[in-house]
Image (cartoon, rainbow, N blue to C red):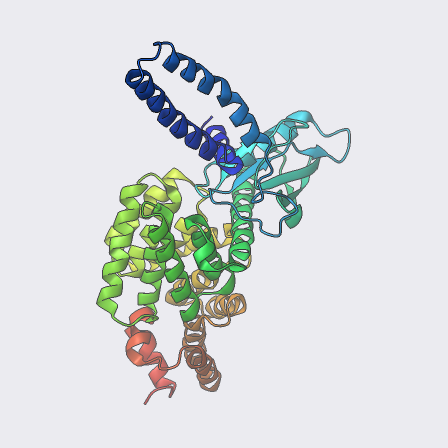
Amino acid sequence: MENKTHFLVDTLKHKGILVVLSAYLAAAWVLLQVAIAIETTLALPNWVDRVTLFALATGLPFVLLYALLRKDNRLDSSSTIDHASVTPSVALLPFESTDELTEVSAKTDLGDGLLAVLGRADELCVTNAADGEKLDTDFNLTGRLSVNADHMRFSIQLQNNRTKRHLWSDNYTVDPNPASGERNDLLRKIAMQVCAEITRAQGESAQRRDIAELDAEECYQRGKAQIMFKGWSPSNVKQSSDLFREAIRKQPEFAKAHAMLALTLGLGQKFSYFRGTEEVIHESLAAGKKALQLAPDSSEVLGYVGCAYSDLGKQAMGLPILDKAIELDKANAQAYAALGAAKIVTHSVDEGVSDLEKAIDLLPINTGNAFWKTALASGYLLQGRLNDTLAMAQQAVKDDVSFYPAWVTRAITLALQGENEAAKDAFQQALDFHPGLDQEEVEGFAGRSSLQVLQAAGIWA
């Protein structure tokens, strides 16, 4: 019911009906006051104000009909701009069958399961469409499936409903048992990927326009897409931070923008992307505090803020926030990943590695996962699993070649394996992407012992 209410409000906003209604009521109130004043001043019959009120009330349905039917250039499907000024809306259409043997109950169970997971995503307004129903949503999610005794095969497609552009699709094979843990994890993975692809689409749309033209939601989506799909380089983190600040300037009570500002500043401070460390820490903490005040029960907001606090070295503050984020939404892979990274730093290495492994399996592909894979590599390193460390660091580099901590982790591991020349080459890659990297910075995120390993390999005298 809550999702459908959000959808109705968003639809009214999209159509401009709320704007037209507000303008009409305001004008009607003014006209009524004028009628009353004239009736009193000119000593007109006392029915004049009642006739005016009747006329205004009679005109209201016609005004609303005009607002409903008028051509809205912002949402015209032929437009090259596919943005929305409110939370993105998604319609989950009924699953189709690839054969007549597929049971209706299987389609219903799978659709309901996916709807439940998507419905917990704070960044989406999700509604379930009935057979043949067409909804005025930003995105449509469709699926086809077939079921036999051993497995269920299904495909998922995401389409931009405004431009009719295909955004993403994938195929899956899974246990048909609705209670299967494998199936539940897969639905969570799909939900995360859907959210990521919508962020990508909205970020690309916002990227084509000047920041001055964007509303708060569009600034937020553009900033989020910047780091999710272009990497955690210093320039990307700084640009994203500025976009989140702009979103807050345009909408001061925008909780997610405050939370993401806290996160980007916290990570930027951790990896020395910003000058003026104390000012950055203060701004990050203030943004996190404001986000928690605005949305204390949002899993997404809690996940970002808990991660920010942990990046700032305040794990005692961050860990309970991350625990609550996961309690609210077990599909929040970002919170799982942040919790795992925080546990590794606080010496609960085995638990942290387990949380990170689960999170990385759920996280969407090609979405800035170098940060989390580097954190997992550091956990493997502490466990003495050098081959796994090297493999995970290599995956991180593949995901985001500019993320210099992944190169440093690779260099440390190679040095421990006695491959000093290869370690020097890897460290040089880190310097190429982060010139001026010094011993204090390396010790700050990798630890004193790792710095000593690099020194012993001849990287520093």
